[in-house]
Image (tube, rainbow, N blue to C red; front, top):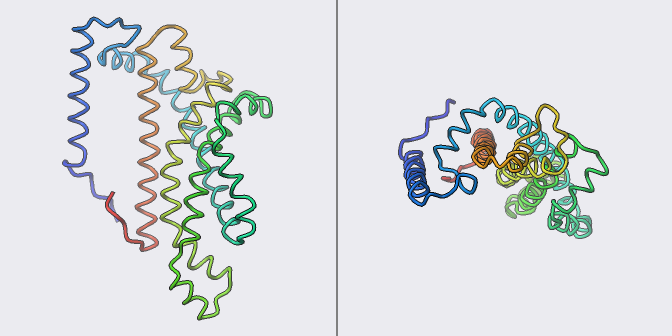
Length: 262
């Protein structure tokens, strides 16, 4: 079933507001004569995007590879951990607090340790992206597995369905929307984690990722290039979010789950 194109009323307001804000910033920075090295005008950022398009493209590709691998790993392991925690109350009480604690540890503090354990390069960047993005998937999927309709659980017990039958045919399908919510949150966090990982562990292979480009541009006082790189990173996060939304719509139709208006 083909997806309908977005309606004009959906995308026109943000486009108009972006254009107005860009124009106001352009005129305001020009009138106030703000130095370019402090805050470049939007026109200078767009010029930097064009001039450095090849370098930005290579960097964003490197970051997208790391973020995609980290998000995929967090989705797979997050679901497995949530399933394990949902099966037994004792296991959940014993290990779920560790998952919460693991999420509260600042990633910037442990990233240097990951460099010691895994070395510089893509593996460490993927590990940082994974660590940042895995908890929302665990928490949301576990919530879905534990919040199955009691009436449906009673119906399965009435028909003498076993634990695994109930899990596969009732609890997992009911948890799909919760998993997709966690995946939507994790998609943006995976990009953030990849960039933080590049700040600490990039080995500059093939020019490095977008985080490395930001660091290099700051040291060279090319503020317009920094803003261009940040804009590309934001667009990458939006692409990830849009892809997860697309997967969510397809999956909900497949499972015949009613969609809420987003």
